[in-house]
Image (tube, rainbow, N blue to C red; front, side):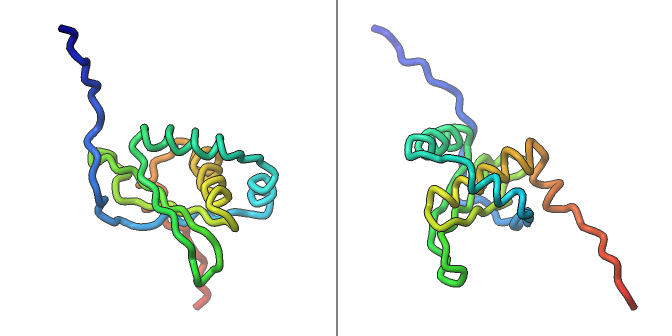
Length: 128
């Protein structure tokens, strides 16, 4: 009798311990690029499958205050140094919110540690 090979998958948690939101600002050029990118239904499904397989967890909702759809993504792998850090994307449709999230992750964060980005403090000039 053939035995089924089990693939080792990372441990996935149901509710990551909240550590904070990444605050990634989009400039006008970023917004133009995001808007120009095509994102079909099959792209949406393919991206979701890939990111879920990588251990990401997503929550989709409608933001009544800002009148837009929002996706919040985070890693659900407890051993990840970025566990509990959330990143949001917003748009007029669910697909557009995910398209923004993908742009931020792939183009603006581009492999950087979410923890380091969360802890980075911008020095602000204070006029006393």
